[in-house]
Length: 371
Image (cartoon, rainbow, N blue to C red):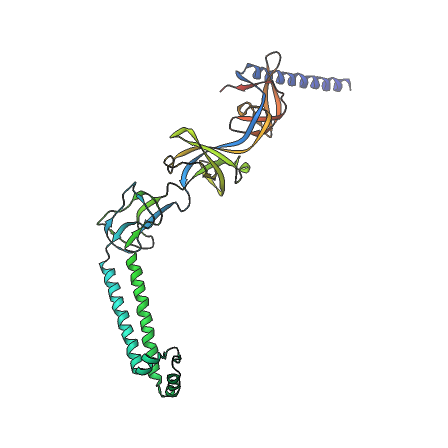
């Protein structure tokens, strides 16, 4: 028994010595590291998220204008950078054949109308002209009671063939009228008009080229309305849970680094954008401050999205907090000048500061490890 007791005692003492050596080594390692020091202090801090983004036209502000018919481009009235108004003619495709089709359809309609008149005259000239009888709709004239009575007497004398021809001629007239409308629509496709007001961003064809319209209409020009822009900010998956529609946002562009533009979160895309194994979400920022002549599509932006503000919060730089598993720590300078590792809890944070809710007091000196 005494031998077993001494063995257990020896094992216990060895464990204590080993733990002490480990703690000494950890503290020695912490003390031997080079630190930059900051003081924990209270101030008003806004919780915010930093993101990069891109200026983009809003939906409907960028339109590709294409041709719905095939043919040679006779005239092109647009060039890159030109301003255009909605309805302005920007191109014309050869249309002599289409104009001929319209003229032919108009002649067919006139012939069909003549056929209707002939069938009316053959059916009953007097009633068709004076009483206005319409055999197709079986309507009796009502303008004159004597004529009305005469029609009622004469109706049994009309043959079925005469009435059929009358209805057939009227149907032919309607078909000719529809063909004329169709040919006019086809002719209208030869003249390309600007669907929106904006600036010509690109031109994809030239005068004299022949375009072939298929399932995808060939693009002539691209028009962008520069007064309708937004910012697509790419927010990391770790921060997207704190972003909501209606939150205020500020952003800058590289061209004007000293000018801040205001905006508001208007939408969050549900599907992630994954690039090089980094998961981001597209957050749409509607621009609320004036930007005419300053912003252009595809400009790179630096975006700050604000969640709220807390007054009198105890804060330190975010870089001073280290994370191990689910716990967070800081290195605090003691009276001897050494740094000890201390567990803390955090609150709101912005781009550079983070709130400490427990583990530190105002005036504590915190160390930031040098790279």
